[in-house]
Length: 163
Image (cartoon, rainbow, N blue to C red; front, side, top):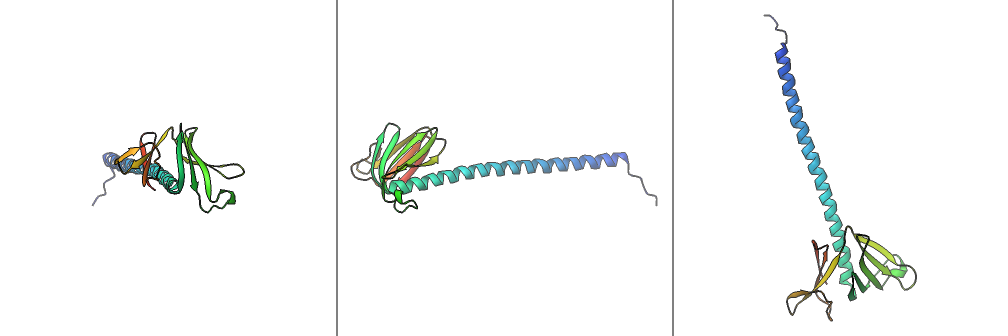
């Protein structure tokens, strides 16, 4: 038997097949990488919103008084135990928009306040309270503490709270 030398045509065909397989593998890897990146961004957004929901739930569930003034919400609430002794117990606080961020400031009886950035970007927020008698949402804080309220940030993010 004679050995046949590798023909140029066979070599070209094998290189084309190898190139096609590599292109398919690379495009699959690229799509997988893009999906992973998109999933990571969505996860970060979800965790940020969960953190916001949790912190606001902690605040609103312990709220004693609440008043809306212009673009701010003034409230008094019981912060409970805090590592900083000045911030323990009943505190005055304010929720407002500052430089495109939703900010919560708490003041002790003496000394400077504590500023928490709760969410960004945020350009406006609305608080609404559920009126059980009417079965409707009301922007005014009722005389008796409502059992449910919601916060709407930038007209597209709604966060409900059970008080």
